[in-house]
Length: 146
Image 1 (tube, one colour):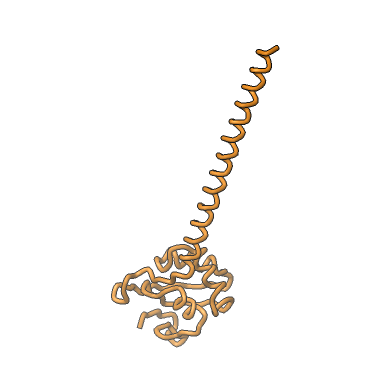
Image 2 (image 1 turned 180 degrees about the horizontal axis):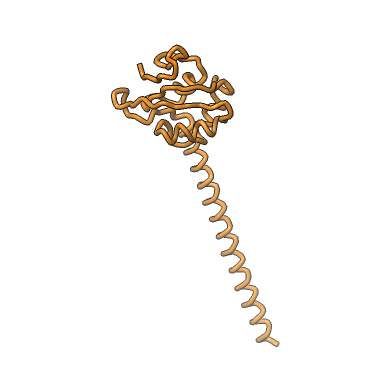
């Protein structure tokens, strides 16, 4: 009977040790998950509030014609701006528009944007609040950058 008690004690010690190891692994996974989520949230927030243009300087900027349709939502406009090389990620532009003074003010039309402009400047133009250098209806379809 003494041998059976030794086996039970050894078994319980092994099970207890295994539970301890599993508990530590769960804690490590939870910490890694929290760190990953925090890093991702910080990076996303940084991109939203670090409003930098694609071009390094005004001299390097290129004029790009962008057409905003009647049915285009902000994310679709962001995709167009990304395709034209004006922004990095449409979802960041979407959030920037939602947090800006230009929320819901983007108007359909043809616009000339520059790669040296940041998202705030582009939103001002797309909302019709900054019309400097933009084509007018007098241009009869002719789009120029001046």
